[in-house]
Image 1 (tube, rainbow, N blue to C red):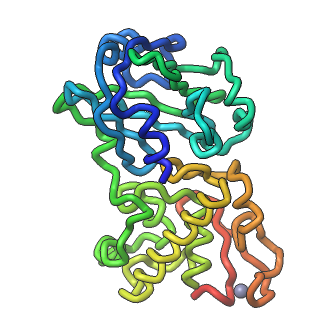
Image 2 (cartoon, rainbow, N blue to C red):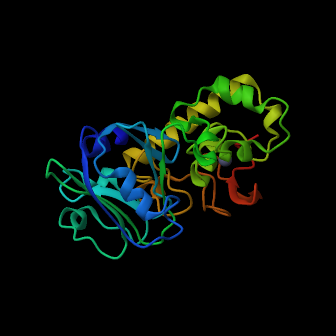
Length: 283
Ligand SMILES: [Zn+2]
């Protein structure tokens, strides 16, 4: 959905200018190399790999963007900028994006040969990443990514969990299994599927894996609809997920009554992440 909405801003357009901020942790490819590699290239297609947007160029290089927790990708003239932004604290609101003037947090600014709207990557905290992969080059960050969470088949989850002693929530957060499941969404999906986050992954039945994959899809779609994790390209990790906050049934509700059975929601740690579940509904 959002990839499709971002695509027209990039696909079929020839990059004429690239402006960046100074070299920093945000740039996995140095700004000078980025400019050299991008200017004159046309964007052929845009795909999503988990939390990454991958723009394939006409020379078979790929511009890879990760918006992190606070990054926003938008065009100042986009008609629905809300859909292009990662929901985050200190993020620009849609109306601000419409009359946006690049500021010191605008780390990447792409101008196009067609003279149409520029595209900006703005990130106040610099958690995002910008990377240019030359033809045939790969990067472990991208290669390791598993199936996109929105398209995760129960069958894949079942296969990936066989023989695994790790907690099922840990497996869900493993980007090599399903790219794009953030902490909040893992908790919410496990609640929907009535599976306890601490269960050993290998002990889940095929049916439970199918229910869980279905729940992951439902939760992610809902968070996108509410503008929560704002794009289906970027699943906000902790916090900063806008309206979806109102729909959380377990996440950050430790001690409060379960909305289904009334039992107090428990909080624990799984894979070093704050984890919430209902001790009665989830087995
Ligand atoms: Zn309950």
